[in-house]
Amino acid sequence: MSAAAESYGPGGGSRLIFGCMGLGGAWNTDPVSKADVAAAHQAVDAALEAGIRLFDHADIYRHGKAEAVFGTVLKERPGLRESIAIQTKCGIRLGEPGIPGHYDLDKATILARVDESLRRLGTEQVEVLLLHRPDPLLEPDEVAAAFAELRAAGKVRSFGVSNMSGEQMRLLQGSLDEPLVANQLEMSLARLDWLESGVLVNHPDGRGVSFPHGTLEYCRENGVELQAWGALAQGVFSGTASAASSSDELATADLVTQLAEARSTSPEAIVLGWLMKHPARIRPVIGTTNPERIRACAGAEEQAALMSRTDWYGLWSSVRGRPLP
Image (cartoon, rainbow, N blue to C red):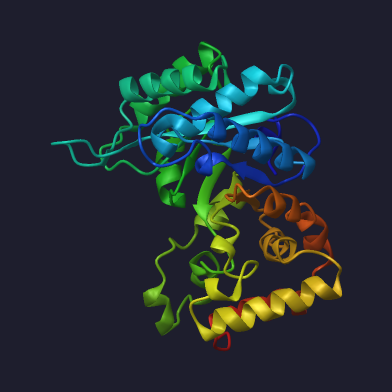
């Protein structure tokens, strides 16, 4: 982890991140219910027990209800805010009647959306703000001006991106006077393009890989923390067998179970430990709100340290279903 990334959170704690997208009830604009608040408390408790101290949000999650219910949790638990770090995202505008969904990273929009997130969360500052997705109309100097204003006002401590390539980051960084600290990307044992792009250079199969080659290398070279959303792969390898959709996934789920049983740990810890074994020091974002599954993730960092090269490649080879080139 880069020095810049380390500066935005409290000391200690796990490398895991709790993703709050599942908090707040259904994806609608109904008010947050007492049951939603109770479920959020349970999920936060489980995350804290697992050593998690960084909580990941976005302004659009559950139409803002994920931030709102988390804000209620903070209000009902004095002192919690001082022991955790919060990051949120902006840049995606959900579709409305007559207005299609789109991206908006204009300065005025960034400033307004951060103020809305702070109000819902009931806090004066977030440790990290991520730009949620690339906006083709993005003007780097406008983004830089927004970042500078937010930092000067004490509303955001550090800035990063999500779902951006290395070249997009390079363009944006050229206008910034401080380093981007994180890039959040979909990476898991089920979504392998981030790995495949690096080994399929000069190989015909590389034409089917969508991950922009060089992005991991850019982040590692520039000390940008890599965060993996979708890290548990929706339970394909650590849930029920019915979650798997192919024979390769079924075989890999069996292999995960065998490794977990041999090491007296959980399948979740094996799946996340596989990600965390990578030398880029990936930080998985845990998306489940099931307290039992959240707690089951606690041993991931230990499993990453214990995992052999043979086991790591064995899982990758199993799920890809064919030998490496």
